[in-house]
Length: 440
Image (cartoon, rainbow, N blue to C red):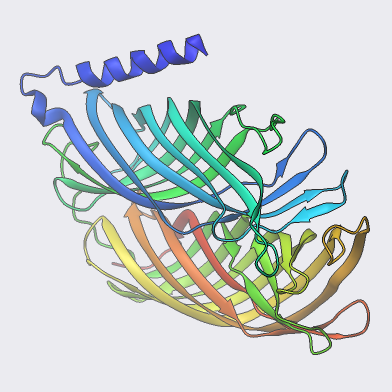
């Protein structure tokens, strides 16, 4: 802990002393961003499990300075929030169902050191690390039926040191304004938290997050020495490979024999892999056939108000073949945003089991049962928003945000019943497109 405090003080000292040029104000920048975060299932020392879900977009801001070639230091503030979904205590045969009043909120002030990697003419990947101070609020409770008071399992807060690792990229928008996107791994080791009975919670608070930023910089603080040159884009065939991550949003399930509303809830973030072959028709329009693979763990199934939520163990895999039409802006630029739409076939495989405590919540009866093990093929559509950045004469870096939705998958449940649901995904992917030939 002493070492962490000394390191933090040293980093903040670097931030204060960073502008050493003849015109110090020319070395500074300010950054504003938004992002979403994902916290994995917490496992306690006694075997208890706490399932955690996402909680919308969160802010991120930084004040920084360039202090050497391709090096930056910044003071970074952020808020990360997640929603507790189910607290499962197998030793006591108890299951607690929190709601929107419950929260895991980390407010952090970090000192980051970042290295810009001088690759390409119109983009800069970067890596970095930060250490700082975090306030963590941790509330897990359950509203009882009728007029009974809310019962709290955890209602505590802690403060302490945390660290983060950063990787991302920057592309220029104007001479002073840049766009950046990055992934961050954040960890607060062993926060001093207790449950309502005074017992220590033996956990580490870990969050994976993705952020987009707008960074406005003074004349000397940007990663690019000059605006990127204008480039003609190759007309003809191309091949593209990309990887990324994403998750389906909560999806309702139609089961005519069930009571209440059922939904697949709290998907874990999982990998996305894409491969496409296409044709660039000219300066603005391209068409492609794209194959995509996704895999996501399913962490919760919500059986409605009478049964509540149960923990899940399983996954959903999808393979799709889409035809995309993409419109590119800013012809002739080295950095080109684009919009796209696609439609095609989606094959989904669902393997999900549920476990927990019976619907009376405190009855001493634990259970584990198959929920769905089946597959089906349906159609789906997607929308894309992204940016292309020139790397070489033929190679282009591309990154995009994707939203997609399928029609219903129609399957059978293990007990022979009818099971129908859809998938609605959000994801971020990045990759390289290579022009196979053609003319300008």
